[in-house]
Length: 189
Ligand SMILES: Nc1nc2c(ncn2[C@@H]2O[C@H](COP(=O)(O)OP(=O)(O)OP(=O)(O)O)[C@@H](O)[C@H]2O)c(=O)[nH]1
Image (tube, rainbow, N blue to C red; front, side, top):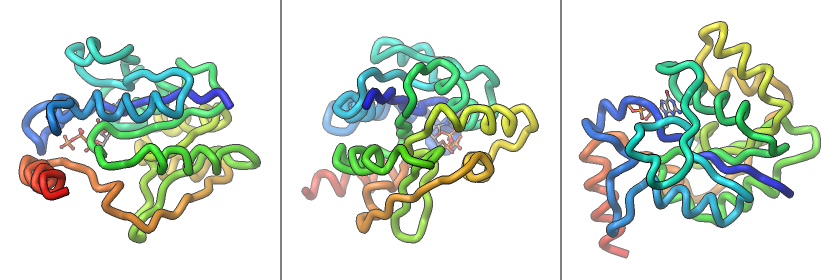
């Protein structure tokens, strides 16, 4: 199956105080970590949103409507894509293994407009696969100012969840403290 991969890397990183995409773990920037994993399972990859500085790591698709949060990145990426299925991963979720991406993709297809990860009782709509068919509903939500991704996609049709036991895989890093914790955890492994 031809799948396009998109690393969501826009936003303000206001809680981190610096661009999260350029934080490094073991000498590798989060933007590189995310793209490397997407490349393993996708036929092509690009960066959805983010600063011009990220262009040295991959092609950037700018948000059509800026400042609307990840929904703006999802819509711009799907508008750019010619693939039937499109895998999204946020740049600030660096512990998701490739195996989890494979599991998400294996659930894509059928009647679904999207599939997304669920772990520890939490749904992660930005870690998911979206079909082309999701685009009109997402565009409509964006145009109407309804920026909540989960509500927008659930209104689009059938959304399946792939449940993971390992909720640590989907932990995101928003603050310097969370990032420091992550570095310590990786150092312990
Ligand atoms: N393309 C795009 N991605 C976004 C946008 N806002 C957030 N993201 C991405 O969505 C994911 C979750 O972002 P958040 O942590 O909610 O927001 P943030 O702006 O990165 O950080 P804060 O300013 O601290 O809230 C991250 O991968 C961001 O890079 C946006 O406007 N456009």
